Length: 223
Image 1 (cartoon, rainbow, N blue to C red):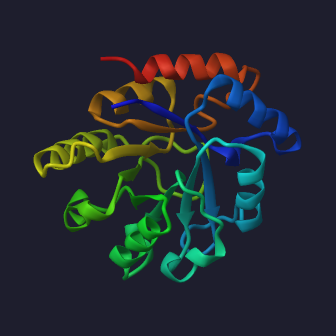
Image 2: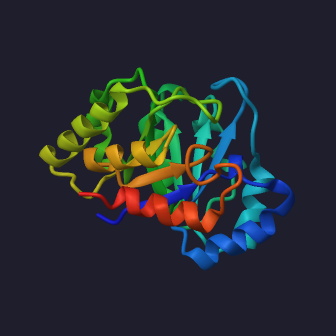
């Protein structure tokens, strides 16, 4: 399974975002991770619906839209969704998670089930036909720069075994939270294939995106 890097635009230089997008296109970045936070489901506010529209017009890189919002089932129409985009909704955010994932599939995007660190992997079992990936939060969602919750590495490995044994080896595992170079290698070995890159790797102060991306790609390709 191809390993994909998804830079977190929450950590980007917004005063030079146009140039940064062109750099990501030049470097062949796989996805662009967009955190949408509502101050209810998580204790923070970030990017919004107009930002998604502008990104769709500014780049052809598929978006990796992470909806950290309460009741996304009632709000999907707020967003401009483009075929090929990845869209994550949290298991914990709605009592209608299956219906929400099915609506995403119908919209032509790749549905992803996101689970918080304290949510067990068993919640995935009855949703396997509805998803293309599972996003495992390796920190509690809401803020960049947090430390890895150590037991989430084993959680990724157990989830990979569950997916494979259930007959869904094509379902990807995305990980988000403290994706340092060392942690990325551990997550990759455990079975992750999509890595949300933020302040722990790609956006380290005083370093270049190109060098950090090269180093992160090498880390996730370890055997």
